[in-house]
Length: 264
Ligand code: ADP
Ligand code: MG
View (cartoon, rainbow, N blue to C red):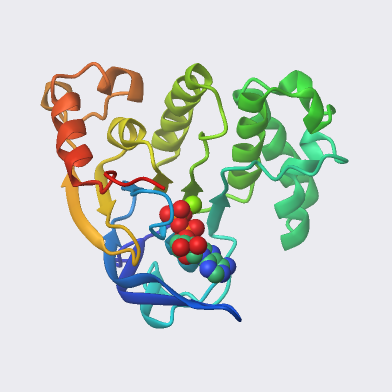
């Protein structure tokens, strides 16, 4: 439970340089962004603009060249079990059963085995994977694998979820269905979410706020609060959001801000 008055994530004046023997790449320049607890923020930007780099910094796997990153008021110095990180590729281990994949984090953290197993079984049942607990990842479809990966991420009960293009390897229909399911799960658990995507529709339909990044070096270009007044305080499901009158207006505004003119 997050009870303090700090923002869930505070990114302030962050710059990141990658150094390789051949070159130095300025991936992020002076990025600042605060995410409130329970908020769902989506970050959009063209390929190579530094979206994954930003999430990696928040996860603690990488340190900024300058600036500060705090999660729940504490400077990030290393990966924390309170932060769940889900990638584009599901990174399930092919030789372990689905249930054993979901239990990896708990095993790694040395959490109580029986409690973790109960939670893992509960999550897999809720995500329609009860019959596949003993299956190997190769026996599952792409959408099922991503649901298993989500169960693995949520099994350690993180407060903050970092999602890096989690749907982009899936076909369009699966992506729409899964984004609806995941939005419902995350809203029910009141998680703070930072979703990175190049899909504007996905961002608008799922998030409370959409952050637009400029091309490399990545900077924050604009921030949009997304509201669908006909739903009042409630957030529509992504599927419902796509049918709202405001949806195409947000889409057009954000589309115009993305530098897609010379896509490489
Ligand atoms: P995005 O996720 O928006 O596509 P990335 O954060 O992956 O962008 O990359 C931003 C820039 O940093 C790109 O130019 C990429 O080539 C470079 N980059 C990413 N990771 C590394 C790395 N480990 N070493 C060197 N350069 C990198
Ligand atoms: Mg990326």
